[in-house]
Length: 284
Image 1 (tube, rainbow, N blue to C red):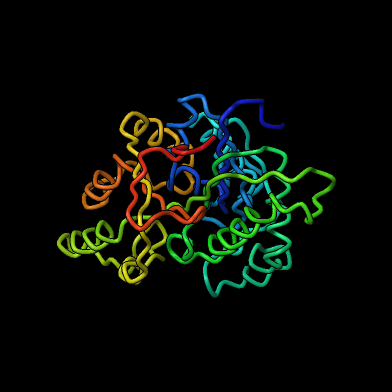
Image 2 (tube, rainbow, N blue to C red):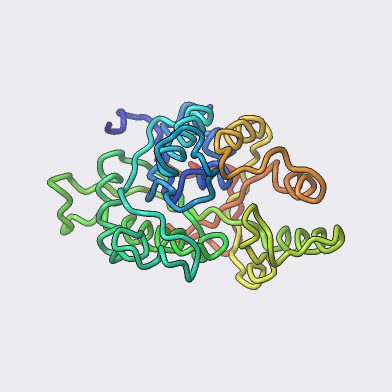
């Protein structure tokens, strides 16, 4: 499906079913609500993610998570979802890292070629992906970030052959990220509630204390109050990855994060002092 003439289009490139919702879901829903064609490229089908023993009637984890993504994409109002065809690599050090179809086992240039093809076909003005540490250092997230950056430049390069598609250069590339001040506050609150910030998340495999040292500038602050409820509904679609309605310290943290989503503008390089309230600011 190609981009319609004179229609604004946004392409999100993420690694697993749920990344689009638990990350910038409010922003994706906001732009879909505004009439923007919002497309998602998902590198994997989340094959090695958390799953109930019986897969809830599905053939396997991948089939279950694809169904959850379909539910979430409809809730968020996405125009299309496409898969890049790679396999979930699991967390750092997992045996799944070495699977021949794992995302991290692929050359970055090959993944970038795949993404750039979709960029030329969908013609988004704005592209978003993970920050350089993949949010919390997930190997697939980092691979997607690096490949998307390369693809952003490749898509507009006339010398790059992509199955006969003409060059198309998206105008802006953003990384979804979290303000480090907010993360530091989250660490303090977790300790106040006697929770271990080095074992955060459903699988207790995220060390929040290690993330605050990597400082990323914030260039766009998107108010998602009008779509927070939509994001919460989409989160419930990913029930296998969602422990349920947050309570206690998790509820406090969710409230802190809920009203705004933040982005670093990678390209074009922004001025030293800039704070955009719209990812399409300056788009022609």
